[in-house]
Image 1: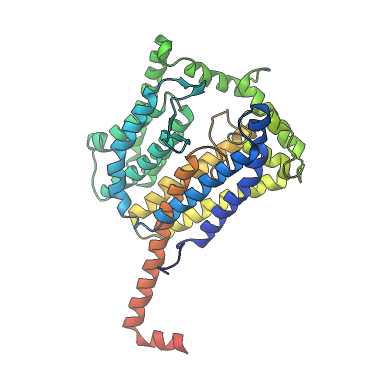
Image 2 (image 1 turned 30 degrees about the horizontal axis):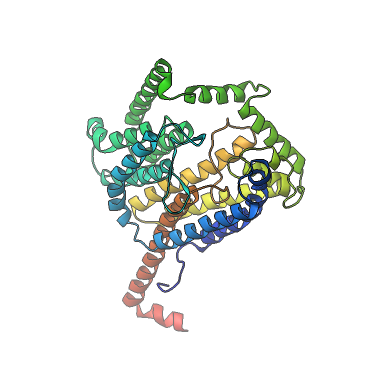
Length: 399
């Protein structure tokens, strides 16, 4: 077992591999929009870049899943100040670089790949919260005692993510609250935190409105997306994308137009990332779209199975903390294409093209698989102990 390249939950490995391989088709098809409409490279260049990112992601996943999961306690403590510095650096770049929103990204030198620091920050934060909840599980806690070690880093990270990426900040905060609830953190304290967060957000909106030059267009963008979702207006950019996505989904029918035959990919600005699910349904039909949903549900089921089987309280929290946000992100992405949620900018994990978001997803699943490896080792140790204590067990296996 120790000499095998991949260990742990083989079903999870299989589904992740299947999603990654499948992603080559819609990414190659949808990238023609970037190539022929925008004039940015060729579809083959986008495909090879996507393949490189996923191959490197699986290499990272293989490396991560060989690390004993208890080590992630110390790793999260060490990385937390690093991600805070990265977030500060990202925000300090300004609002645009080359016409694009630069307050979310930094560029990795010599590689030419954009790195969204909020994805790493959210992953490290969930690992840290799981570690803190494990540490206080047997302690009678007062609210004031958790303010500095728990809510100060949570608040700092969210405050740095919020101005440029509201949807990510909301998802991370929701997942932190859920993890705290699952980890036994007092519910009445969670209600206090929720009230404090609501007050802080209102204060942020007032300050942003009072000093619009500090964050030009961000508040207006959030409000317009919500308004477009509630009362669609013809001609607005958010509504334009949603309407084209709905046309793509309706055109796909049951079996789809066929691989590479999407029409709406030429009219959707984010056809290879934010709205790739609409392209999948257009080319593979509603049947293909349902299969994608089922695959994510199976991943969720495997996450729950791994969390249930592990004996470590920290392991349970860690699996839920790094796994659930990926599934939530996937269903938000698909919900936006189906006009269930307002436009958020969340990509479809393991399928959408882009930068290092796929690497963060692979790290998250590497952590989950590390815990499943530990379960296998625990099972073998218990079996060995039983056999040593009961020689008849060995004899019965031999017979």
